[in-house]
Image (tube, helix red, strand yellow):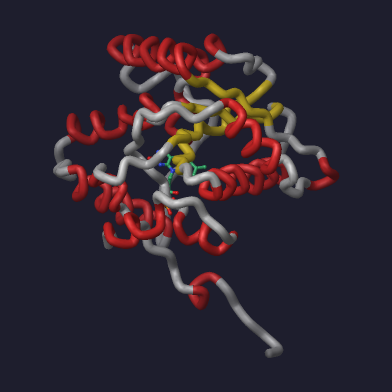
Length: 238
Ligand SMILES: Cc1cc2nc3c(=O)[nH]c(=O)nc-3n(C[C@H](O)[C@H](O)[C@H](O)COP(=O)(O)O)c2cc1C
């Protein structure tokens, strides 16, 4: 389901409440080129650092690219993609092998929605690859971030990373900005390390595109449905 009117009505403005930020956060895959000042990115990260973490480990690390640094990196990856179209090796397995239902169906559904909106035929592998490759421009966003974590960390700290990430995405909404988390970048660890301060002892978990949504980008009409509360929650004793 796409809901463009909802996007125009809510998504370009800044969010006055947490609920509004949650409702209007979407993975935005089309951005304006308007720059985002460093001070705003710093405010978002400082706010997100108030996220809870087990033992207050605060295991998140962030590397931010903008301006010339972002462009040089994106251009280098575009050049390298000609030699290694599938990247430089995976940092981790993004999905379990043999993804089962209901997860497989959900994944296919959102991919189909994305392809339908962008005019990509499901069987056209080239077109799918071109759509996928837009990840490696941060979908045109002026700021690209990488979230990494010490390789010694385990599942509890990855959960901390998720809490931090959601905080970043919601605080971005408060500032009228949008985001797209991007695990697609986890196949470009070597180049990411070359262009950032991320060391070999850290795992690159994901990228995050950050910028102002392009209200005319049809791809931003994508509205990914969710399972109902009764599908994922079980209540007793009420
Ligand atoms: C950790 C993480 C990694 C993601 N990686 C990608 C990605 O590489 N490329 C992409 O287009 N979307 C990516 N997404 C966005 C998801 O596809 C999206 O969150 C999901 O389909 C639900 O849509 P919504 O965020 O618009 O509500 C990622 C989301 C998360 C949380």
